[in-house]
Image 1 (cartoon, rainbow, N blue to C red):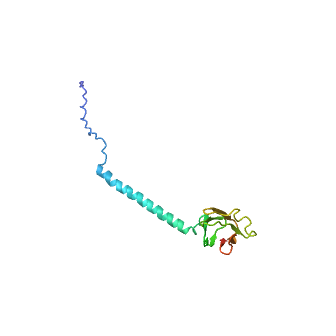
Image 2 (cartoon, rainbow, N blue to C red; image 1 turned 45 degrees about the vertical axis):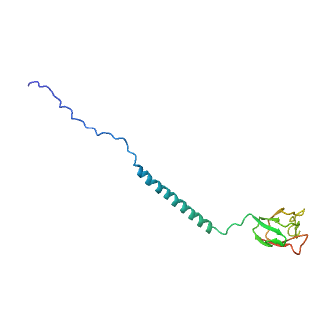
Length: 152
């Protein structure tokens, strides 16, 4: 046997695909996404508003304000009859140019009333902690200035 030189075949030519940098979406695509994003946010806000509306609407009667107001005017108390919840307060504000002194049946409301007359613009606040119907008046003119509070 004869020695023959060992030959290796030439390497196969390698081909590499040219590498291309990542391409950003065209500007027109970005412009198309913006209105869609705004639309999605608007839909979410509308749905949340509708849900909150119906949750608040069906969760029972509306809660009355913590403070009710009665004006003292030259013609009397306004309103002269008011209904509130137990624990709610009423602020009586003198909107008359004359002074007024609030009072009530001391058996029913022992701590109700003003110690000093209310001058124009003055106010007196009282918290009604017991249920019932209570009558109050201006001690200077109890025939003209009377009112009723019903506490539920």
